[in-house]
Image 1 (cartoon, chains in turn red, blue):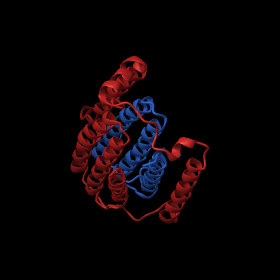
Image 2 (cartoon, rainbow over the protein chains, first blue to last red; image 1 turned 90 degrees about the vertical axis):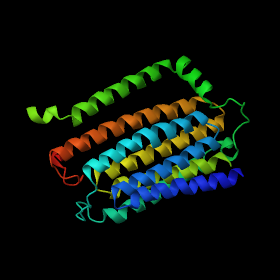
Image 3 (cartoon, rainbow over the protein chains, first blue to last red; image 1 turned 120 degrees about the vertical axis):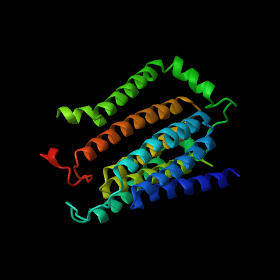
Image 4 (cartoon, each protein chain N blue to C red; image 1 turned 90 degrees about the horizontal axis):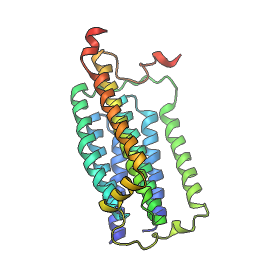
Length: 171
Length: 99
């Protein structure tokens, strides 16, 4: 059962990723990314991390993708020009990617990490649920948690400054 | 499923995102491909956290998610600003800062 779920989600995640890269229209790329994100949330659930999966669906597939859809609708998806400043980039890039994939796989699979071939240790029932992650965030990782909130606020202010209308009138 | 499957899948997703960043010209699609790469990193973090049996890797993944959300907000803000000034939405034509 677990194998079936893993392969279905893995195919969904990979198909979504390829869709993002291959689609001509940016709107379809965004839709493919939503498929990818939901499959990834299923993979997180298989890895017994319920809170990360929920955050993935709510934050990414919910909030961030709505932002993307709005911007695609506002900007519109234009076609891409065929002009290439670096000749052959379209053929060299996949070659580089294949080389990187082989290197990453070799580096991980040939490492001395014995536990890689296992399914991980047996964990208690509360592993990765919101209560456990919340306790960690508010006790052990309080400083990174607050730094993340400051970063989010700065990003929101920055987006308003960048995309706001007033700047254009004064400039 | 053993953990190595998840790690190899994460490497595959990362390289797919890398191809997208390298071959696409539209800044919007490049941002989407950056999301792919960050999510592949997240998958590896969560898989390793399961392998060790320690939840702290999941906190790391959540922080990565926060940073990705900030990156999207700033990137899309820049995109809207570029569009308002009627500049071309093509990373090869926006090369003034290249030196």
